[in-house]
Length: 210
Image (cartoon, rainbow, N blue to C red; front, side, top):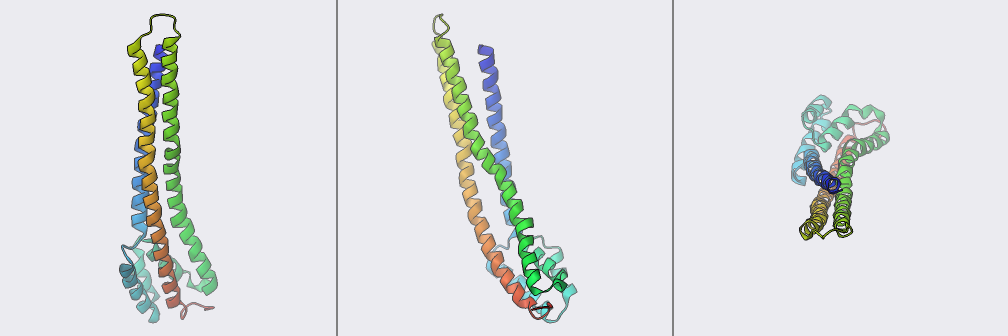
């Protein structure tokens, strides 16, 4: 029985370590993804849109698309999509661009964040499993009928407390990270929303149906 509790303990520690690494990896990837899709500030985005406005005013669509092609930020890629699909018409293009932003940017980030939220929910549960396992080991020692091994009991109780603490230590920082990412993502959405309004103002004179 002791070997079973020992093996279970090692398995729980391994699960907690794996969750911690996976959660940290996912947070880093989400953070990088959010950083990749946004301009640093509104002034930088306005500079980009001013260049686009000048090329569109001259109806130089190829030059406008060249400004966007090597820029992987969301505003640039949405601009490229809008210009290359300008024949669809103004109203239809607005809908398509918003859908594109939702599908290619927001859904991708939400998918990555869902893994972080899974870790946040799982880590305390695994820690609780360790707590139950440790207490089972301690009570098993008490009910053995032999002389109680106080050292072993202390180790079982310590294991129960450590796993609970580890689960919380994994979940709490990730909750704070997700909150920070959501704030950053909200600011990114607002910035891109402003950019899209400016873009479509520039496109009004060159898109059919506007």
